[in-house]
Structures are given as C-alpha cells and as structure tokens.
Amino acid sequence: MRIRSYKDLIAWQKAIDLTIAIYGATKNFPREETFGLASQLRRAAISIPSNIAEGHSRNSTREFAHFLTIAVGSLNEAETQLLIAQKLGYINADTVDILFHHSTEMSKILHGLAASLK
Image: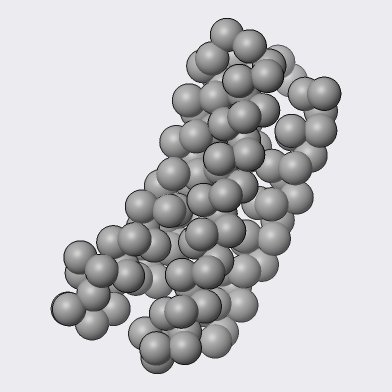
C-alpha cells in the first residue's frame, strides 16, 4: 500500500486509538485534576499522533525521524503520568495494564517506522 497521507500510517492510526482510550480513562478523574494531571495526560497523548502527522508533512526523512522521536517522548510522558494516576488512585490497575499494552505496541511501531527511515 502506498502512503499518501499521514492518515495512511498505522503508527498514526494506533496513536489516535491510544489517545481516545486515554481520554476515556481520564474522564472520571477527580474534578480538581481537570486542569492538572488529566489535562497533562491528555496533552501528552494528543502529542503522539500530532507529531507523527507533522513529521510526515515535512520535506525530509531526517525531520520525520526527529518528529517520531518527539512522539516517543510523548508516549513515555503519558506512561509516566498513567503510573502517577494509578498510584493516586485515579485509575485502576486493569485499565493501566490495557493502556500499557497499547503503549508498548505503539512504541514498537514508532521505533520500527523510525528504523525504516534510516
């Protein structure tokens, strides 16, 4: 399949799915976290597909690879915030396990895509 748009990238599609799942997991966070941890976690999640899309639109493979590393950083940021949310009792362990499964898959896809650009 020919990639014509960032929307054709499995990495972007999976990142969108992860972002939606994180939004679902944060909807029941305490009200006082609306502008705190919930917001931060959602921004980290949104950053993943956003950086994939932005990088794909750049005119060089090197720049695309750079944006993929930013996406990986945002993924790691989201994982850290999920663990904090779990330790604070905002999210249960089963939900975190499911999100980490998606995150691990996402990480493999991003690293594979970056390696294919070299």
